[in-house]
Length: 365
Ligand code: SAH
Ligand code: SF4
Image 1 (cartoon, rainbow, N blue to C red):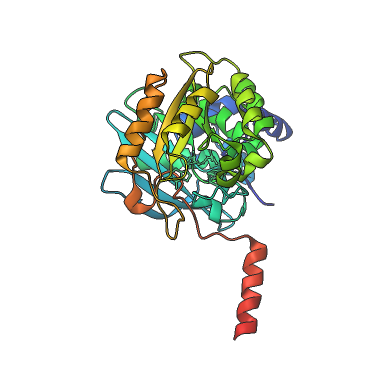
Image 2 (image 1 turned 180 degrees about the horizontal axis):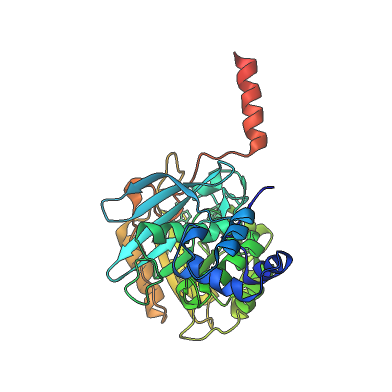
């Protein structure tokens, strides 16, 4: 019998499974507390649960995190982990420390189906979606690294989580939703929904549901102010053009000045960084409670763009700021270890492709 990894099972599904095993429902809360508040990695440590029950749990379940197959540290304190999952596939997770807090950038897919031309992940075909277990596992692994068990109430190394790593989270909605419910559960990891931000390249039909059901902060990878240019930079725009995307943003549930949408805008030299672009940008988002995050382009091997000059970025930011929007320029973190926005990638290939390349090798030899 293959055992189930208990990490990533929702409360509802655990209740149903425990019921089948003849375990009363209060056991779910007990086990949950050990797993997500104390972070234990063995049923043996659950010392308020009888031996018989612990044995039964261990017969059916394992408690597993992704394995760190490589860890790198940047000179600016950013850390990047390459994580290996049960099937040997890999994805990256990044921690960006700040004073008294820190942000964990997690992945939702291995590779990406979308092919934004400025993004390193976009050059890696989609291998597969990450499971809820693997998404939650990234946060738990980082908590292990910082010895943040039991769940601390303040001064956390991991105070914020952003779904801005590899992949398009709204193309893996169910698993992302289950993971967010587990991460925000007050009796466990207890992250506030307000401290979780989901970034999307613009999967319009899923945006409202994301706001209704998950209630997390939304970031939109905008990057261009005309359909013509956005079609090139973010090809998904051909399916969901700017008009539809901005309409979905206007309708995002519970928007207010305290709860604004973040528009991400990568600064590409001579491509989207003119003053006319800046003016069009503020026109486009008029009326939406928003902040604009200007991201200096982070280069990667053989990338086809250059980052805008500091002068162009300041002039752009000034126009946005004068129009009444906060326009922070995101300080690149972890560039020296390819850990900054859009630089993540793993060597994982789709199984089919691996087979084909093995055959190619055979033919070549
Ligand atoms: N797929 C989602 C989330 C991951 S990307 C999305 O596209 O929103 C996280 C952010 O980094 C996105 O805004 C993305 O557009 C941006 N990004 C991608 N490549 C980049 C690069 N080379 N330099 C700077 N930002 C980049
Ligand atoms: Fe995928 Fe986001 Fe990269 Fe586009 S920017 S290729 S959606 S990860």
